[in-house]
Image (cartoon, rainbow, N blue to C red; front, side):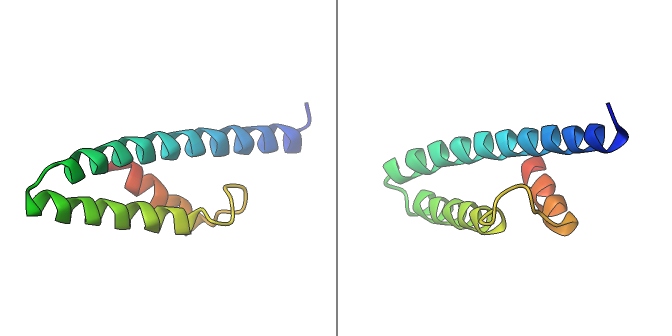
Length: 83
């Protein structure tokens, strides 16, 4: 396998792994939002709004797809995944 092909395969694998990790976290947050909205507490509703905004921000960052993400965006996404 040529070096370039190996690099492309590694990047593709990393991209798919990142996508899977982001989608999994989005689903966990969506579940949290549903639980918070079911709570009658105003603080819970405010927390749900904050989480919805975070989801929106992430969707904006990946709106052009995963294959063309800049290094700064990748770093932001990885930081988000750590939280």
